[in-house]
Length: 253
Ligand code: MF3
Ligand code: CO
Image 1 (cartoon, rainbow, N blue to C red):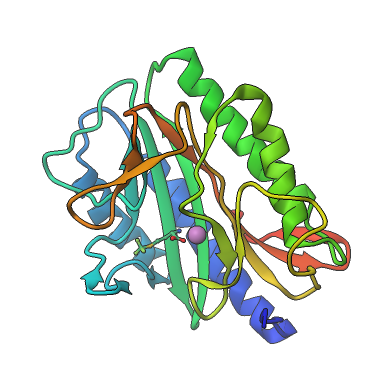
Image 2: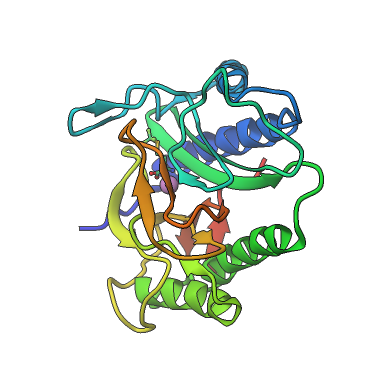
């Protein structure tokens, strides 16, 4: 069953998502050459306190693993779930994906973006632009009566002409009291398939797109997913609410 949020719950989702967006916005401005990813993680912790929320990633358990960071920081060929480290220094030309998931008043806000540091190759800039556009194509497919597959197909259609590798091993998801609720929202698929969208659903839509192959490799830390061919990856995410009129983007600062 896909959870439908009541008006009171929607207001708490709005508060959590606004906080998540503000943390992401403030953190983005700190991504400059010379900073370590551990430094960014520590800064994120402080920003969450300032914006009245806490990390939903810190202490998150999957199987026998516990996530140690406060945000996910994934650099260049890292796709998602990278962990801040003191010896990982941001350099000019890096692509830095920040994934900020917070809890406030018992509800989750989830958003992500890839930042291009300084001067990067044109193909890396295009990858980021195209991934963000694909996110918005997916959001545009959100309306009551449409299906999850319409979101997936819209994202895929926005990306296919460029020949990118659309990540298959990680997908978007419902969100609410839990970080991951039903339904799963793949970034590829067939229009007209999957669960029907209804007003009151909250969805985290998050295309992860690789310059080369879609295939991934898991790092020894058990969290960090990287591209199998070492080429760069981009990730953009918003939490949206399904309304009678369409999607309301909740993760705006
Ligand atoms: N936005 C990511 C996701 O939906 C956040 C993961 S937090 C972690 O999977 F703790 F699991 F890393
Ligand atoms: Co997410």
